Amino acid sequence: MNKRLRKMKGSPTLNLVSLMDIFTILVFFLMVNSSDVEILQQNDSIKLPESVAERRPRENIMILVNDKEIIVQGRKVVNVDEISRRDETIAALTSELSHHASRSTVTNQDTPEHAVTIMGNHNIPYQLLKQVMTTCADANYTDISLAVTKTANKSSVAPEV
Image (cartoon, rainbow, N blue to C red; front, top):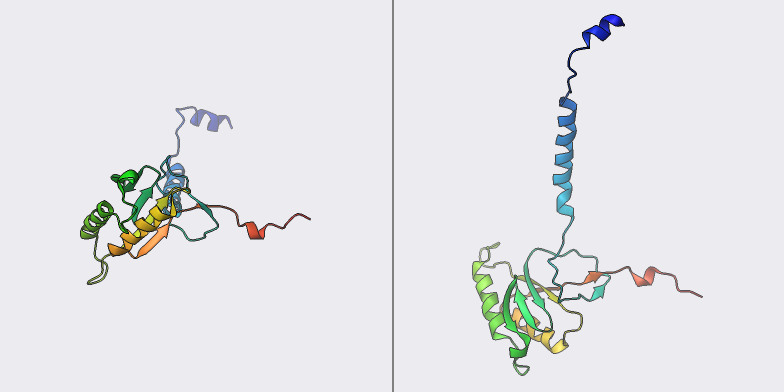
């Protein structure tokens, strides 16, 4: 025992091989599981409606609609006050969507990806939402999704007696 104590009396060493193995496994674990979380860009001026929807959002063109303005991909397109209620479509939004369509990648031979997600404030007028959706459809964005805040399924809760 004294012999071993004298032998180990030199400077202590740290074996980094096992520590490196643990960090390597941890890095691969985090890389694989980091894609499970999807967060939509949130704007303070928009309070999304609540729903029990189960489908996750896809990455596509984001249209934010609040009481004051319409924003496409973070760029302000038009003020809500400037939109004519008599028109079915919004000209500024049509030109912005056409610009994005010209820049989009082609998945099929002839058909580019045409999908949008509308993040609309929960209290915007239905007429405005209808104009935005009609404008998207006229600009050949036929895959329209509405962003909502997920809530618990109320039908699974037992009623109180």
